[in-house]
Image (cartoon, rainbow, N blue to C red; front, side):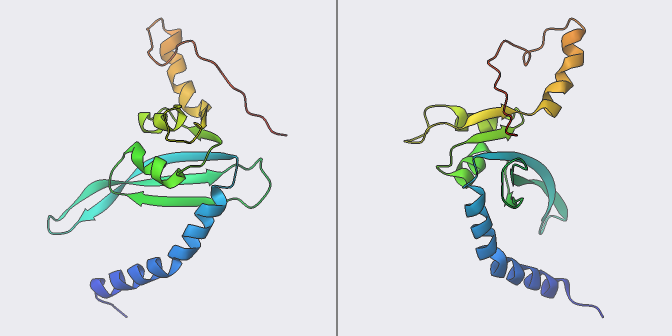
Length: 155
């Protein structure tokens, strides 16, 4: 059985619209947690009329396994990589946010957020370890600098 690609595309679109209330509810539950993980990854997006793909981004927001409750992961598809997407998704949420060192997240950690206390940044050790070889080779690294370290452990 074969279907026209436009028919399949319409079906996928209808399913997406039907599932949106579920996604919205999961995002609401996710924002009730005190610690979240966030990351963005590039994905190829078809560029109709050009016969090519262009880069878009899938933003992932995840609950922490150390907190009670079910694991929640919400994906937010965006055409661009901008910290504005994380700010819009999180809104007035405040808590501990585990992220890589992408500059787009930095506005979430500054006191200038309008009437919302800043989030507390938790650094990703998997990303930090990437800089250790250059630090030990005697090269000056801009990311290895004195900083206040917070350990987050919740048994």
